[in-house]
Length: 133
Image 1 (cartoon, rainbow, N blue to C red):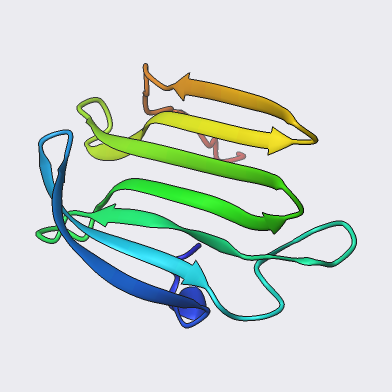
Image 2 (image 1 turned 180 degrees about the horizontal axis):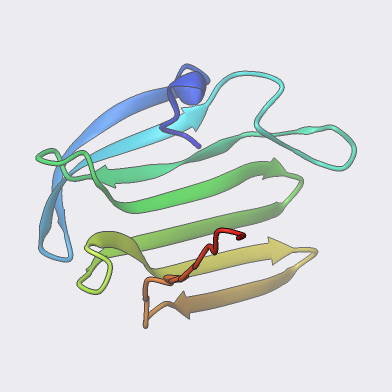
């Protein structure tokens, strides 16, 4: 969403140097939403500006890690981070781990999800067409 060319101009971007993520050399980019209305809004149509960091492999353009934070939520906060890893089964990088942190009304929720067992679903059909006599 943040890297979509239609949305890139909504954010200010700052290069924060090179950094390895799980052994992969990356370029760190911080972003902060500046446009209004924001991409995310409350049920009362209030702006919820987003900010975060994206770590990109400069050799391939592949996103290796991404973090998003929601700000100005009247004392509430949200941060989510996703790490991507290669899947040998699929031949592409996939989300491998997501961590989430929420603070709302003085309560906190801290969660981690890990993903594995990726597989490609395939359907094979066999059709025989008979010509009427």
